[in-house]
Length: 481
Image (cartoon, rainbow, N blue to C red; front, side, top):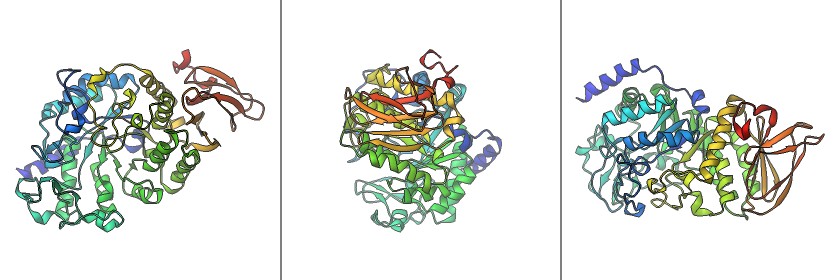
């Protein structure tokens, strides 16, 4: 049966010739979905879900299909969904495998999310809307309940010889990160021996099968730092779709080298500096003005990185600040800097969960309603989608304006961010624009005019400003133009 699956995956790969390229992904805006927590098949808005219980709450692929219009209305042009493989079953001291990162059988699907046909229907529904779909995949490890490892139930690697020897990770040692095990005594995560040619080839063939069978457009590579870089080079080339890896580090010198082996990475350095800068009036805006430029210098192409402020592993912005103006500034940081925007489901609803598992709330109690942040994300996506390559292919130039204000000049757009908070009046001089140009703040539709030196005087009230030449907005639908 296993050989047959490999043969099917090979033949399917020959037929699947419409995979999205990295350059095509550059223009996309991604809405990240934790499948179990986004939407239920029954459309319930009252089904209970306490994230601290760490149980399956009932989100499904059919639920996602039903709420695709909600995502598309906000201007997102792609979704990223949780891993789809069958998981470690039953409860553990750390709950159920609702998140998808405790693989038991690569080739079987997680029946809690739906059937094979449901997943195919989701992909078709996404494609019919002109959107892309990215699937999270776990190549680094499998999962086992308790300290005694029953390798026989794991598939396709059902013997101990397919895994690295057990050892605890020293996160200050790269060799240890690549060879030792994540997890703990409650849920062990046997680490795949990705130096073994059979293991490597099997993982690649499985992914080719996944991509071709379900017509997947892109892959998110979980725990990419935990596998040697050279594995990812061959993997990314052969699976034939855009690959964005997770290297959880705020250091450009650690994260940037990985782009030599995959298309892009999550931009953790910018995310972490922006979080520190924008969620409090005491934030370090100087760091925020510096880190994006450092990423441009050290990385091959930051326009292929994932730009984000929230995900399933990090506290939500609304757990760090309740100030709506600061949340709008972090929304701008999710969409407009260099890279491919990624918004974690519920950021637009100001969900307040802090660390895992609290940040994995169900979205359905919000009834997917419109609100101030939904409108903000919709407008930002509208602008980015309208400008296209004139915006997405150029690099932003960051400047520190004052202790509470930074600016980013990217293509025809000048973004101005502040951490001062709602209602706090801050005057700023923004330079580097065209002399005597007429600008529109797309956030408010207020018009301003530059002087003969290309400088404009503005007053912020805690909200971000996104200044665009009025002349380029014709046909955008923004501010009635």
